[in-house]
Length: 199
Ligand code: GRF
Image 1 (cartoon, rainbow, N blue to C red):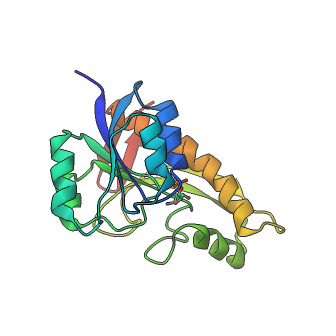
Image 2 (cartoon, rainbow, N blue to C red):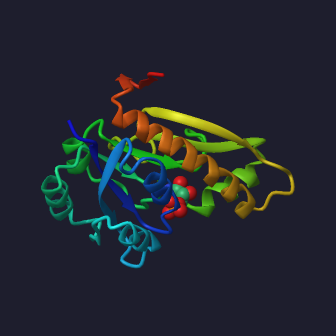
């Protein structure tokens, strides 16, 4: 039984992808494919540098995405800064096999209008004292699937959105790698909305 075969979906810089390459790739899982919704995503370069197959696919082209995933015999999908909603056919085909990282403590500051720096702007405007990151399973909604892991960070009065973004990004890298490791080890037990993470 070889390593689990992982596809990573990106749209931008790919620092979460880089963290997975460093902590997961070749150890707990094998990143076989990187798909970007943005042809200019720096994350594509990171994949290339690590000799991982990578390509841009228009996010509306479900059939092409599914075809590639089948070709590479992908076991599960990690959305790492992927700014598009996953279509129902893809969710159905990989139910319980797609995880996402979101830069807030869901259910706060999530959903259709909350992505990138905007999430942190809204958190600071609201005046929250903690924010953080969430890893969750992907279902038909936007940031609505069962929660796998969360970790909080403090929000300081003098914070600018970029300060909070950087503090949260460190936590994203950590809990995404931990979650993907547990996924590769079949140590995530989903029971309704409750996810049990086996130590
Ligand atoms: C991260 O904050 C991620 O949570 C969000 O988009 C940002 C992209 O990060 N979805 P990167 O592309 O992994 O650097």
